[in-house]
Image (cartoon, rainbow, N blue to C red):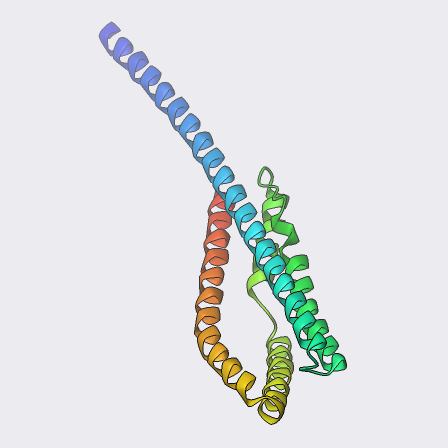
Length: 191
């Protein structure tokens, strides 16, 4: 009987040690997930910020060239700038929640997940409006160049044929990165 009690206490001790080991592993795993989510969200924020700064720089340089050389009327350049500026500003506002991600508590993770969802989803009506306005502006620019500067029109057409597939590929990569971050957040919320 005494031997049975010794085996029982030994097994209980081993069970207790295993439970502590699992607890430590679980908290370590949670900390690793938290660091990964925070790093990933910060990386996406700075990537979006760099993209916006690059786009703004290109826009400013093109404005100077287009207006100084009287290539496009100044009022059309202003309309084009307002449209692109609005897109950039909205992008920065939507991804602002990724800047300082709170991954320590549940509310912070839910807020971060909502920021990720806003970054990847656009309502159907808004998408249609953006596509229509963008296409109208693009058609007007191309018609203007076709009528007034055929040489520039050819370069614009070649540029568009190169830029559209590259931009589409980049958008798909960014969407995949946001989806991956959303999955990481969901995993962290499960724990």
